[in-house]
Length: 336
Image (cartoon, rainbow, N blue to C red; front, top):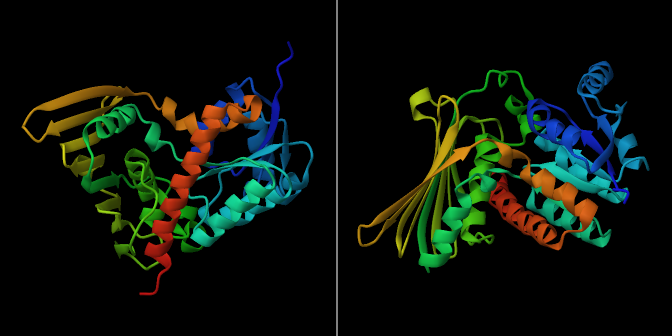
């Protein structure tokens, strides 16, 4: 039996796309012709397409959006470009998978979801932290033991990457916000996913270092969902010994901690459940970064097989993403 393949276009090809999206694109049996677009200069884009084994390079991403040669697009460009690019591809009948954040304004997000639904297209958002080993254990513990969650604290303290200075992430006109939009997004998205909560109930408070709507390096975000207080601390440029990814959950059944531990060979995630009566359980998992491609893999699988379970997961992830955009929109764009 002949296996159908999907022709796709990748718009933007920075370090994240090269390390994560491109290897999956090149190894997937479900993907046919591969087009690259939207690299800063046409010469650089053509050279990159040749080096990475894309079939074609089309410099103008709008031309790619209009082309009948592809049926789906993967967008991996600076945050500020996402809204226009997603909208253009959807208007031209293309399914879209986009790196987080999908938009910077919640009104834009709602518009895109409605456009995708109207055109019967799949709109998917790439946020991979929720698929780290150990996260499913946290969800199971929450579902089996807790009826109320009182407080959640998330920490995303990372090193200053060597390619940050002078990059688009350091440009307020391209990043559309600071560390909370860029890296803090992952923690917010994961917290909402773990708690099955996607309706923030009050205004967001953001303390940060650096100009508002710029690429600040330190941020502390607090808000509520129903009766749960959520706080997220994000730092870019944390000293080595303080770098961490951690989520703490406290509720009526006790305390859960998820933390990422760096290793010399492989990273590990550790889940600890401390019960009200003092008993505790600990679970250890190896991290091999395979989860980084999970959202894109689901997107391609749904296009190929119409897998209903995965489609429901994509739609759920989009709902979660909308709640994150709502929180960040309130944090960065509300009047001071």
